[in-house]
Amino acid sequence: MQKADIAVLFTYFVAMIAVGVVYSRRVKSLDMYFAGGKQLSWWLGGVSVLMAQVSTFSIVVYSAMGYQYGLVALTLYWTTVPAFLIATWLFAVRWRRAGVITPTEFLETRFSSPVRQLFVWSTVPLKIFDDALKIVAIGLFVSAGLKMSPTGAVIAVGLVTIFYTMLGGLWAVVITDFVQFVLVATGVLLLAPLTLRAAQGWHHVADVLPAGFFHPIHKPYGWGYVGSFLVLSTLSAAGNWSLVQRFYSARSDREARGIGWTAAFLFLILPPIWIFTGMFARAFISPTGFDAQTVYARVSVALLPPGVFGLMIAALFAAAMSVISSSLNVTAAVLTVDVHQRFIHPSATQRELVFVGRALTGITGLLALATALVAIHFHWNMFDSMVVAFGFFLPPTVLPVVAGLLSRRLSAGGALAGFLAGTSVGAFFIVYRFMSASSKASEIQSESLLFATLATVIVLFVAAYMLPVKGEAADRSNRFLKKLDGTALPTEAGENPAPIAGLVIGVMGVVLAVIGMGALARLNWLTVGIGVGLVIIGLAMR
Image 1 (cartoon, helix red, strand yellow):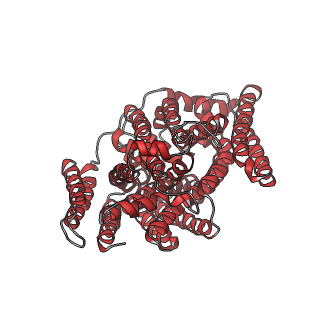
Image 2 (cartoon, rainbow, N blue to C red):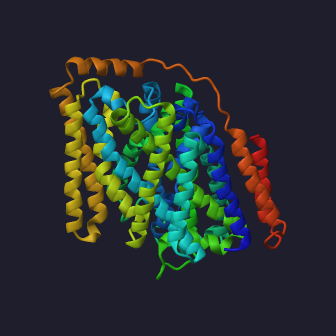
Image 3 (tube, rainbow, N blue to C red):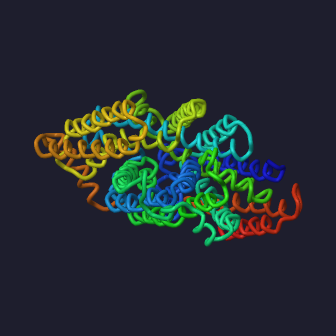
């Protein structure tokens, strides 16, 4: 890495910490720390949802899949679009009207205290594991691009993210999400045409790539796998704590819907850019003896000028940090409200709860960081690990929760039965997978997801009609769902995050422009142009 790249990266890290420090002074209550005072706008929330999903994992892994398998990588990723449309249509307004500050808080009112705790403790480990995979992705990129050990990169991104998330809460997360969105969009938009030019243009790419490379469906990802992946994406969107948090933190019902629609639109237009970058790279990088997961790093090193390469590293750090910070904030919210306040200290003051929330943010972040270091040590395959973890355990942890938002008849016993049915099927397929040949892995993964989903849905449906909720529990259920069918008053506008986000973007632009004009590197008008563009964006937001 050259001095120019180090300067850009250093500026980025300082800016992220500064945002956390600024917002740490404004957090006075648990609602502000974990729900932003219910003042989130549609545009900021939509971008934040996107960045809560588009991690370095998404860019590194899906560009690698594009390099290996072609257009089917985009087919798999685009299942996110209908998934978010469905989640928004069914749940955006209902979550906002629930009046909660954690995704599991309502379960005690709707079902019972044991059900609430069951879904807290069954989901938190999955969130920590997911965060660990996101941290690993940035380690792989830095290792391949900078010829250094990924351990240092993993530790750096983990600690900086933990620090600013602990300080500033949800507002620090969404502000840095927007800054990181601008950086990521700039980086990936620049690299795609440079990669196409290095591949000698579209006609050469079409001539040299393997047959079927531009088919939207082909082996090893056939229609069955894509269908099961759509189920996985839909369940992930419906039960995604980070998405749910943005819904219930919105200013109004309309803003909540806007958050989901905006996120779905961004998922439609951005992923093709980095997936096509991986596909174009196949035209001039031989797959022989080559780890496809490093392709994005390799083309970045080869094609980006000094300073701009530092911006790309910052962008991928940004992508990783956005996902991790969102997950840490909402996971800490669940542990603070659903465990500490509910069982340990019910009379805790707001100041104490904010302190506990910050401490739990740090603890969950350190657990994710430790898991990431283990994953790097044992060389886990990231995509396979993600599908295994979520494919086997997502249906039983998501479906009973969302059923509680839609059905008046489902009882606590029915929710528990659905959880046990889905978990049992998932556990069976895990054992079956590890006893089977590796060539059957993708087939078993798709079957496990579909059967676990089907088992959970059938048991929930049967339980709702054979063993419906009764008595006082039925009264609580009816009152809660009647509240969701009503209209919640909008929150008065308060916080305006645009000036701070604009300031950070502008500072990054100034640093790039100065570097491009000859400071720390040779004169490069591309770097100057990008810097000036970021300055203009920053000034427009002031």
